[in-house]
Structures are given as structure tokens and as C-alpha cells.
Image 1 (spheres, rainbow, N blue to C red):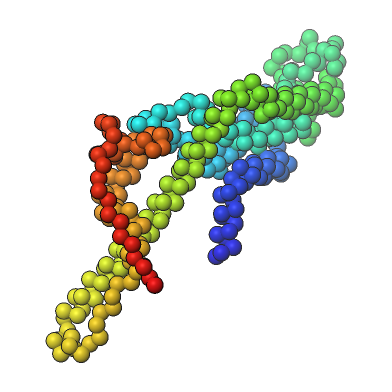
Image 2: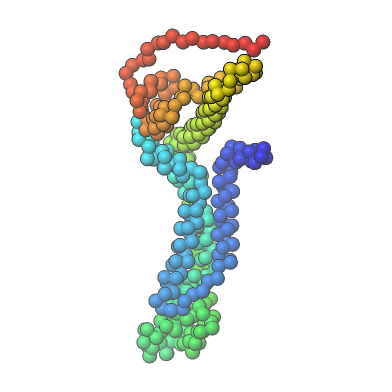
Length: 341
């Protein structure tokens, strides 16, 4: 159990490296998925383009959504975007930075899928086989005598060597090489453009907007850390709340059982054990929130009106949010110290 806890803590402390690893795994998985995928072109004039467009666009969209789902910051972004402003204004630049960071990682696998699809050429061959210039690559003397539907029917069978019967019009190998050459050229151009775009976004953009970039990065990290600390505090409070509630339940049951005994048994029976110091420590962890309605009110207040980002100038929390009204009224505090010596 300790090993799993150490691994979980390591992943939390190295979340960015972990997400980069997840995106790399998705990219490799997308390439492996394409290699294992059995591409079967329908070889029909009205269906080739639709089938190829679905193969080229549907899996990248699925991989992009999967990359967003696996990112832990999606819920944080949605929470920050939909929360009421309250005493803390929402910065659109921070939201854009958070979304761009997630989108950049989630786009790796779709880009790999599109690049591999174009470099392979099967999808492009199926989609544009009816657009091959027969007059240039084939028997141009026969073309004028063919009706356009018949010509489209013959060319649509180019990706299917088992049923292609138009060698007298156009050699199938010539059409396949022609379309695959164009597809690979588009694939390498796509790889080059995405690489240049990634270089510009990751390297050049911060140089021109360094101050805004640092601000957005800082407050994005702050929101992430604040959420984690709040979750840890809530977990600690819930654990202490449950422990004290269970201890009180057992103490009440013990008193009920003692009242049910006879006076003789009560006189000869052992005394009830004194409450341990752990109960007091758990009550200290509750921070005065010892009621279900108080817990619900605290959680509602945290969602509706988070405290302002002004350390040392916090305002008292009243009702469901933070209210202004000048400095706090000084109050007398009593501190008690206990020695265990």
C-alpha cells in the first residue's frame, strides 16, 4: 500500500511530466491503431469520399476528447470558468492559458493519426480516386466516348484490385502511385507545418509576451495548488469528522449499556475509560465546523465566493460570501497551553 501511495505522490508532484507521458502513449497508440486497422474502401462513387473523411476525421476527434478526459485540469478549468466571481475576479488570460496547455497536449495523438494516414496514402487514394486525370495518365482516346457515371464507376474501383476492370482505360498501378505521391507530399507538409506551429507557440510566443505569459502561468499554477490544498484540507476534515462522530457514537452506546445494568454490576464494574488525547486532537482538526449544515454552508461559500487574493487583508465571512465593511473588530483571544511532562 505504501508503494502505491509513493507512486501516487510522485505522479502528483510531477503532473506535467506525467501528462506528457500520457500524451506520448496516446500518440503511439494512435499509430498502432492505424497499423492494426483494416482499411476497406467501399469502391463506390458515392461512398468513397464519405468513408475516407470519416477515417481521417473521426478517430482524431475521439483521440482529442480522450486526451482532454485524461487531463486532470479539465474539471479545474470548468470550475474556474463557471464559478461566480464573488470577491475574486476571473482572468480570461489565465483561462486561455489553461485551455491552450491542455489542448496542446491533447492534439498530439490526433496529429499523429492524421500524419500517419496521409503518409500511408490509402485514405487519400480512396477519397480522390475518381479525380485522377485519365486524359493525362491513361488512354485519352477512349475517354470522350465514356459517360461520366461510367467513368466514375470505373475509377472508384481503383483502390480495390480484386474488382478493378479498367486497365484498358487506366493502369491501376499508375493511378495508385500518382495519388500516393500526392498524399505523402501532403503528409510531410502537414508534419512540417505542425512542427513549425508548435515551435512558434512554445518558443517564440513567450519571448514577445513574457510578462503576460508569466502572469498567466503563475496564476494557473496557483489555482491548481489551491484546489489540491483545499481537497486535502477537506479530506482531513472529513476524516476527523468521521472519527469524532464514531467515537461519540460508541461512547453513547457505552452509556446506554451501563444504564441497563443493575446497580450491583455498576458498583463492581470497572470505571469507564477516560477520553484519550486523540479525540481532542481530532476536534482541533475540525476547526470549529462540527455540524452538517455548517459544512454545507462552508462548501457553498467556497464555490460562490472565494476569498480575495489579498493576504493579511481578509474580510470576515458572513452568510454565503465575503462582505466588506472596514477593518475587523478586535476581539479577545485566550490561549491555553498543556504540558505533557
